[in-house]
Image 1 (tube, helix red, strand yellow):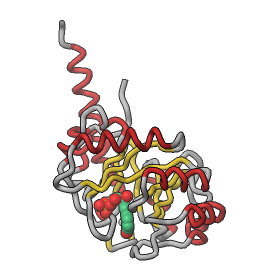
Image 2 (cartoon, protein in one colour):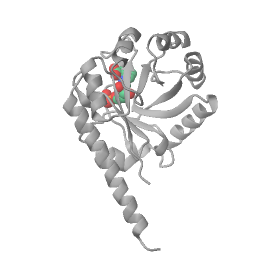
Image 3 (cartoon, helix red, strand yellow):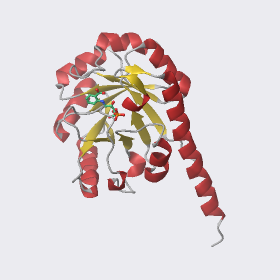
Length: 233
Ligand SMILES: O=C(O)c1ccccc1NCC(=O)[C@H](O)[C@H](O)COP(=O)(O)O
């Protein structure tokens, strides 16, 4: 059996970029509802952009330290598929935000150089126990601006048994996507800076090349798996 690594492209602000993501075969589109971000869009603008999204492509709303009321109000305007809580929300606050919005969510863990693999596992379990709406941890690199900085972290921190359930992000690009997929084997990858011409302005060529690089990783895994299962025992 082969699994396709899911792909999310984050921080869309323009129709043509939404179309480029759809054409690339990526699985999800992210909108940043954090007013301090250069990629910020209002829920009204996201709703407009979502008109270019066909069925079966998820739309993800990224929030940083928003209240349950703010997130619930946003999803009334922009009918997002899923939330991405990228701030300092506690486990309990994450569950309350998702319940108020009536949406599934990913909780971000911002990895620091001294993060231990156990912490990731414990944090995932705590979130899973807190809400049936929790879907997965999204791992990003710790930065003061919260995210979207194009900065990577040490992937070897990701426990092997957690990897198939995580979304890997932070500093991904066409140059490291294949290695990320083959080395970590995450459920999905998430990218913003690495497919941009400038902040908030995506580059269709970079998006297409990134997707190709992820698929090359999938193909490598598939051929390794076939090879392993062909070995006589
Ligand atoms: O994009 C932002 O400006 C942003 C602001 C605050 C929190 C998170 C933000 N973006 C996160 C993402 O776009 C992705 O989920 C992911 O971290 C990818 O980031 P990148 O390293 O730029 O590829």
